Length: 191
Ligand SMILES: [Zn+2]
Image 1 (tube, protein in one colour):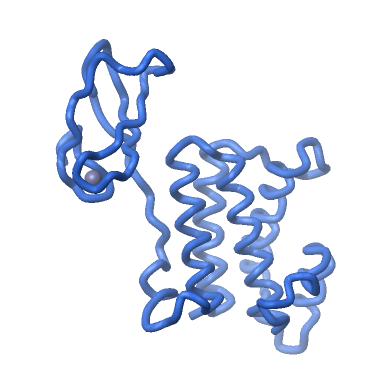
Image 2 (cartoon, helix red, strand yellow):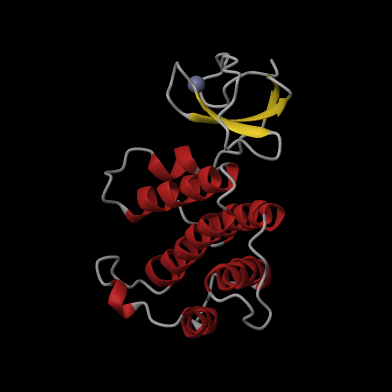
């Protein structure tokens, strides 16, 4: 792979030095002239030395296949992808909130069969997780519960800093959270 390859369309991003004066920490966001996506580039002096690898949401294709935009699983795919994009662009807190919303949807719509059009019935996530866990034949086993719990704590870290047992919304924790969401989707059999 070229060190200047756009992570979206795989064509080369151009050197645009001098960089904008607000460029900091030896990186700059460059709009790819081919696909118009933002590419996170590492710079050294007036050169682009490399690009940050972009992580795509694993279940995007499966969740979207043959479904209308209105299907909650398509929305789940969008939210997962938004978490990946936000994290790529250094918006870790936004990414953590996306993960939390994805979790709320899985718990309420998939596990508890609440209508997606009635988000006012979702209520407290902690209580709903407990309810989903206690359902006869619950799909929220130990591993799934552990994934859900990590995402919940990460969401708390983003929305309620200082909340007990919250996880800091920093890049590495969000990457871990994205993986936990992908695992959770498999463990509770969203498809
Ligand atoms: Zn591109």
